[in-house]
Image (cartoon, rainbow, N blue to C red; front, top):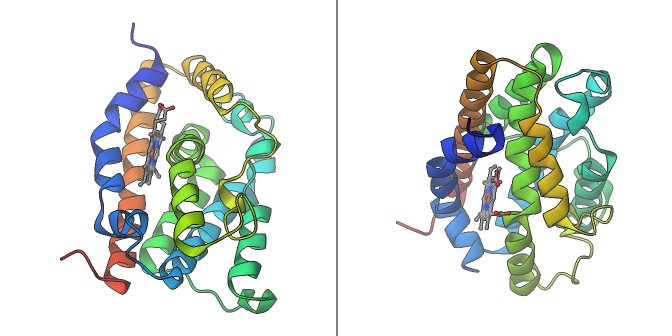
Length: 216
Ligand code: HEM
């Protein structure tokens, strides 16, 4: 039987390529956008991670979602530090508004965090395994393009101090996915939710791309 980690990865591969090659991401990684595009993107991430992490404690003892909730993954504090740096102070607090696509994404996460642990795992996987992988490419480009200190303020979101060996961490994470205590039907639903998570990310990129148009 195909391990669940392989199933979820394969099922989202095409959408991964779509997200990766979206105009906004291509322009950002290509160094063609100003720092304000990066700031706006980081702001959207703050809404997403607040939804992912805001009520995660309630899932700590859940047999399905609990094993994934590792404190070394938490990103909200790092994002807040980045935002304070990017905005030159704390003024951003209370003034940020999510893009419509971001609000829809955060709502969906908050909803599954409340009442569907398997769905929460799908969103958890989509974000954190991505951050540990492609996120490192984004950090490298951001440092080069806008001159942030290596692994310093502005890119702390991408720095996992508590995970010295990301490859080993990802291996263990995939083992937890493979051990998910749910039946085949629920696995299929989790895979569908992962596809939805990717689509929600792509929608955010689309709206960011409209704000910062470049690639025609
Ligand atoms: C330009 C942007 C991106 C780049 C360059 C990128 C690159 C990569 C790379 C190289 C890997 C493979 C890592 C490995 O095999 O260990 C990976 C995995 C992954 N990425 Fe991305 N990625 C990007 C955007 C995204 C986005 C937007 C998402 C979703 C929000 C995402 C989610 C994932 C996930 C979930 C994995 C883990 C796949 C698995 O092994 O199960 N990535 N990414």
